[in-house]
Each structure stands twice: as C-alpha cells, then as structure tokens.
Image 1: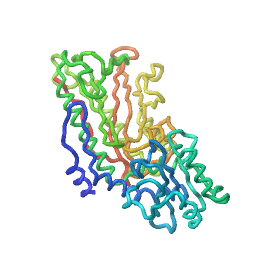
Image 2: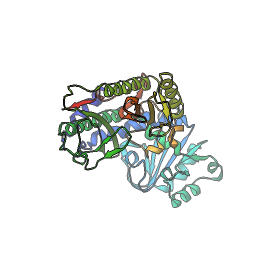
Image 3: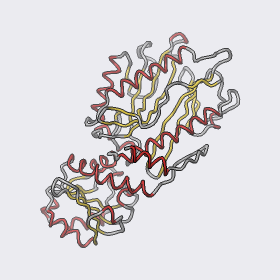
Length: 406
C-alpha cells in the first residue's frame, strides 16, 4: 500500500488551477489498476455470483471500456480450477499483457465448448446502462453456443456492477489523491471570500447559502453576507475516476470573534453522526441492510431519519432531522447502479464490497426554536470514505471544523 501511494504521489500533476484540477492519467498507474482489478477483484465477483464463465461483448460506450479496451469484440473469463481466472479476448485489439489467449471471433464456439461451463454470464439486462451487447453480437454468441449451453446463460448486470464497485489498492490511492487535490481547490475558494463583495457565482464548484426558512441561493449572483453559513462542494476527475467533497465556512458578524453556539451545536451533531456512521457500516451487507443499521443507531441517539432531503415542519420540533444517501464514488456505471446505502436506487440491494469507495453523504436539518417556528440550520456533509476490514476509513483528511471567515 505504501508503494502504491508513493507511486501515485510521484506521478500525479501538481497543477492547482482555480476552476478545475485533475492529475495526468499516468500510463503505469492505469495499467496497474487494470491488472489488479482482474487479479484481485474478478475472482471474487465471479464466485460470489456462482459464474463459471463470463462473456462480455464490448459495446459502444461500454462501461468496461477502461478495463477491457474500447474496440468491438468479446472478452471471456473462465473459472477453471478455483485459482486464477483465465482471460481470453476474441476480436479487436486488447492489451496482450492482460490476457492469456487472444484470437478471432470464429474461435469462440470451440473455446466455450472445450471448457463446458455450467453457468455463463452475458452482458444483457433490462437495465439500459448494463445492456451493452448489440443484437449482432447476441446473435453471434447464440450461434456459437449449442442449445444446451444456451440454457445456461444468465444476466451479468449485477456481476458488472460488483466488478466495477470492487476496488484495487491502486484505485483507493488514486481516490485519496483526487480528494486531496479537490480539498486544495475548496480551501482556495474559502480564502478568496470577501464578505459583502464575493458572490456565490465567483466561486468554483457548487457554492450555496440557505436561510433559516430553507430558502437556498446556489451558484447565483447572491453576495455573501456576514452571518451566512457557506457550503462549497467541488469535484475532481481523471478519466472515469471521479469524486466530490465539500466543506463549510461561517462568515462572522461584526463583533463576533468565534462561531455562535447554534453553529457549534450543528457541527457537534455532524461529528456525532459521522462517528455513528463509521462504526455501523460494514462490508458484506447490502445497502439496505447497512441503512437499516445506521438508522437504528441514529434514532437511538435521538435523531430523526427522513426519506427526502427537505425539512419536515410537522415533525418533532426538538429533533434534528437526518437524510442519508451514501453513494459510490470512483469508477461505476452510474450512481444509481452502484452499491448504495440509501433509501433509493437499484444499487441499494447490492452488497457493499470490501474497499468500497463512497461518499459519506448526509444532510442535517437542525431546528432552532428560539428563532421562530420552522426555523432551522442546514448542513450537508460529503466525506470521501472507504470500507475496510476495520470498518469505515478515510483515505484523505476530512473537515474537522466549520471555518471562521472574518
């Protein structure tokens, strides 16, 4: 792990552009990620899905183009002896260092028949993003397989989602580097704020301010005022690897020398929730199961879980309302089709894999009854996280306070 982190630090660009920053896509790192995914992640997902063979027909804009190459053709993975997964490519150009066998599409029938798999996963699905096999490719495979083999075919949609969600150590190192680069951009934006002069639209990324009634100004010409709680979120991306995180700053009013008690209490609750979440999320459970676990814990602590990210004025006026959507970050088909600890999305039924990279994304609506009925403070946290054998860990520094802007 130390070697990989050192490699990433050495090869990433140090460019600090104000509006957007991404490290160069170093060929050695990309090759390492591809190789490690096939070596470390592929065997687990095939065996989890009880698949002996996975036939992937490369389609246009294929979600596995980064790992397997973008040219048309077929990639076939076979679990022959419970050890290393055999890798074969037929048609199109592929990286020969990643495959054991390469040939033409006319060799597929004999190749499959010789291995005689019991269960074959193929990339068809009723989910458009995961149905990447074309009609001609499907016809070719149907003709290549005899009738008996054809009866063994199952959809590879969940297998594909799990393969993309599984993380090699090099991916986690890259994820941490993107988080750190992104944090530097956000810090620069906070440092540039001049109360009464800087507009939200002057800041890079997603900048917003909400009033106690829940009305929001977002990336608008609204000029930041004293007493505002300002959120700045920004994303960083390299090829298909992406992440998004955010920080907060409070603009001190005239005469204030430190954050007011309501803001401090809001942050204390955010930190208590972060601690609860990291202690109660585990690999090997589905997104739904993890959500049930964390909701039970926060409600025991006196918080109210809400299904939508909006303040419920009819709820207990003393209880802080919490919205949860821990969605995947890094490489995936889409946020909707990756493992997700959330009340929504297809991915909530998927198992959270070991080394899952995700946003510990939760929103807090804290009532402030002294300000008036329905008045509340809002804070949305978006911490970059990963799930290890020890629980939730963070590959990059997290915000530890709300910044005081003077």
